[in-house]
Length: 198
Image (tube, rainbow, N blue to C red; front, side, top):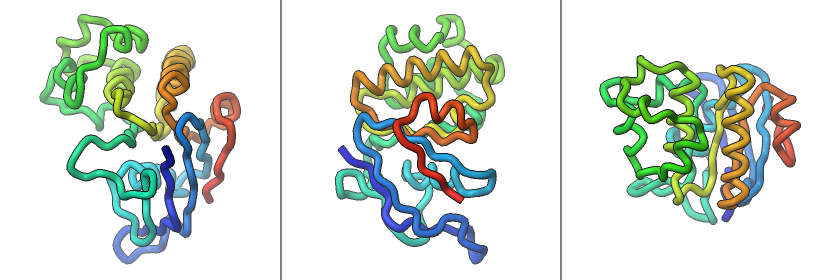
């Protein structure tokens, strides 16, 4: 399977273009890094690739077709700030099962404790919340994962734990992963190639 962006241009309103003629390909099973300075449009690009935002010009294609809008999107995005990705009025078990019901082995592998399922989002730390967001994104139907600074706000031990699990699952399921990060040591360690965006 192939996720590709073709000549993506984007700007907010009538402002300057923050993304210009961006083209890339991500194949199934490939782990690719995306690096760039702050303000270079990395998060906006992540939103475009996952279908949250429409480009001003250009196309995002999944095996040559537009991303689906009326069913599960095989391109899943995990944001940097998990507290913005969950409904504050839902307990965590409802958030976790919003799109599908993860098996216990996946839940446990990402370090989610059973008592957390009955808590509200504001009763969990950022690292605990992000474990839920990552688990939720790893549906059996997920073909590509866009990780936008996914572990930047977490401590080093939690970072390593989450990435070890995600990379292991990606390899087993042949999931393509785009690792968006300003942490070059992380990108160099887990990615087969790096795309620079300025």
